Length: 180
Image (cartoon, rainbow, N blue to C red; front, side, top):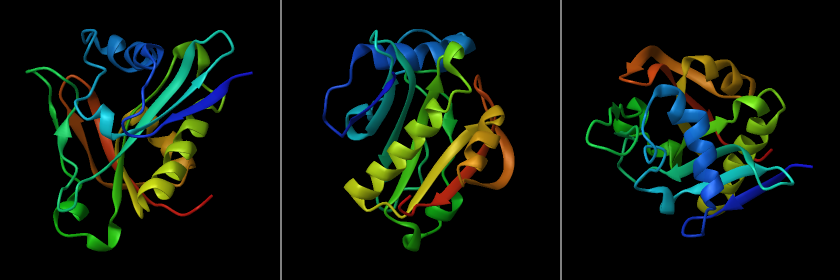
């Protein structure tokens, strides 16, 4: 049976986690190995599901958006990395939405999709962010095909779709975080 794992900021993350992130998110876009790693991975909460053989099947991360920050960030490492836009409500004040968090790098290996694994990862990230940081809201930029998944988990689309170069069409989504 597959097992859920969590790593808090500063805790070690197995190489198999990053391999699954690359295979599910970066390789299909033709991005190089290494683009799956983010400069602030050590400040994020990571969740993953591992099968009994040790293969990581589904991954995700959540980080705290700094006070006064709007959540703008680069999509991946490298000099050619596109910029993800800020979340307007946070960039324009939004103090009632803080502590605010951002979900990034959610991915599931193609052979493990549609088994509820990503939903378990997402719930674990939301729950741990509320516990660790007292998070009030979650924010993300969802790839177009992932919007229904997040919608089914209580996330709401805000504004119009936009394109992140090399990645594709995205929607901004948010959720008020409350205990499950």
